[in-house]
Amino acid sequence: MIHKDPIYITRPLLPNLQNVYKRLDEVWESKWLTNNGPQHNFLESELKQYLQVENLSLFNNGTSALLLGLRALNLTGEVITTPFTFPATVQALDWNNLTPVFCDIDPTTLTLDAAKIEPLITEKTSAILGVHTFGNPCNVEQIQLIANKYKLKVIYDGAHTFGTNYNNKPISEYGDMTMFSFHATKLFNTVEGGALSFNDGSLVERLNLLKNFGIANSEEVVLSGLNAKLNEIQSVIGLEVLKLVDTERQKRHEIKRVYEQNLSDIPGIKVLTRLQGESSSYQYFVIQIDEEKYGKSRDWLYEKLKEYNVFTRKYFYPLCSEFEWYDHLESARKENLPEAQKAVTQVLAMPYYGELQLESVEKICKVIRDCV
Ligand code: T4K
Image (cartoon, rainbow, N blue to C red; front, side, top):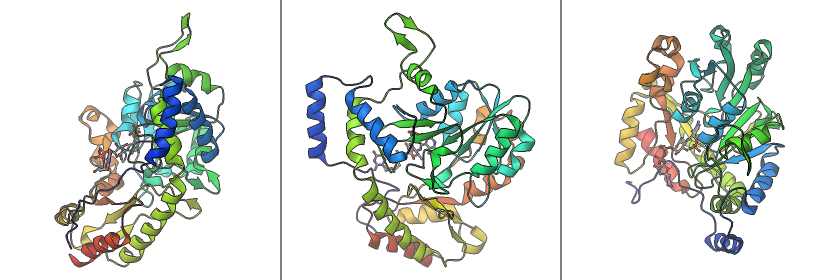
C-alpha cells in the first residue's frame, strides 16, 4: 500500500535527450547562447502558433515576465488582485511600487470574485490583476465590463493556463495582457521561463527594451530595465518539450478521469474540475476538503498521505494578504476575505503528471476514501 518511491505533486515533462543533443549541436555550431538567438526566435514563433496569439514575448521566468509586463503598461497606484495566489503575483506588484488591493475570491472557481471588485476601486486604481487559478478562468467578461467602465487595464496571471481555451477562444484573448509560466513544474517547460501575450502590438518594442537593460542600440540606453531574456539552451528544451505537450495532456486527461471517478462521491471532497466551455490546461488537479462533512481536515489528509509516501501541496498557503509587509493594508484584513480564508485551509493539490500510473491514482483515492 505504501508507495516504494515518493510520489510528488508533479514531475517535469522531459524531452527526448537525443533530440536535445541534436539541437544543442546547432547551438554549439552557431556559438550563439542568448540575446535573441535563432532557437529563441524559433520557439517564439512555434509558441505563437500553439497558443494562437499574435503578440508574444519570451522571458527567463514567469515572474519577471509579469513584473516587466506591469511596468510596460505604466501602471500607477493601486491594483486590485487576489490574495489566493503564488507569492510571485503580488511580488511583481511590489517591485513596481504598486499597492495590491486584495479582493475576495469566488468560492466556486477560487478566482477573483468579480462582484466584489467595484467597491474596491478608488481614484488611485489603475488595473485589475486576476489569476486564472489552477487553470480556472477568471470571470473575464464581468471583469472586462468593470475595467471598461472605470478605464482600468486588465492583466491576467495565466501561469497555470498554457493552452487553455475559454468560450472557444485562447485564454490570452481576454484582458490586455496574460502571463504564462514555463517553470519545470508546468505543463510546458523551458526549465525556467515565461511569456507575455498582449493585445497592443506596439508594446513589443518596450518589452524588448525592458528585458534587455533598456538598451536601444550600441549608442543609447533609453529606460531602466532588467536582464530577463530566455536563453538558447532554455529555448532548445522548450522546442523539444512542446512536441510532447499534446500527449501529456491526453495522459493527464485520463488521470483526471480516474481521480474524478474515484473521488466524486466521497462526502466533503469537492473536485475543482474545469468549468463548462473551457478547455482545461491540465496543470493541476485540486480538491477541496470540507472538514465538517469529511470528518478530517485538509492538513490531516496532507499529513496522512505523507505516510503513504504521497506528497501533495497546499497551493496556495499562506494567503498573500498575510505577508507581514501588507499588515497595514485595510484590504488585507481577514474579515474582508472570508472565502479566501476558507479556501486556504481546504485546498489540496494532488499528484498530477503524465507518468503517474493510473493504479497509483486509484491507491491515492482509496487512502482518501478509507481513512475516514
Ligand atoms: N503566478 C502563479 C499563479 C504561479 O503559480 C507561479 C509559479 C508564478 C506566478 C511564477 O512563475 P515562475 O516565475 O515560477 O515561472 C513551484 C514553482 O517553482 C512555481 O513555478 C509555481 N508557480 C508553483 C505553484 O510551484 P514550489 O516552491 O511549490 O516548487 P517545488 O520546488 O517545491 O516543486 C514542487 C514539486 O515538483 C516537488 O515536490 C517535486 C517536483 N519537482 C520540482 C522541480 C523544481 C520535480 O520533480 N523536479 C523539479 O525540477 O513552486
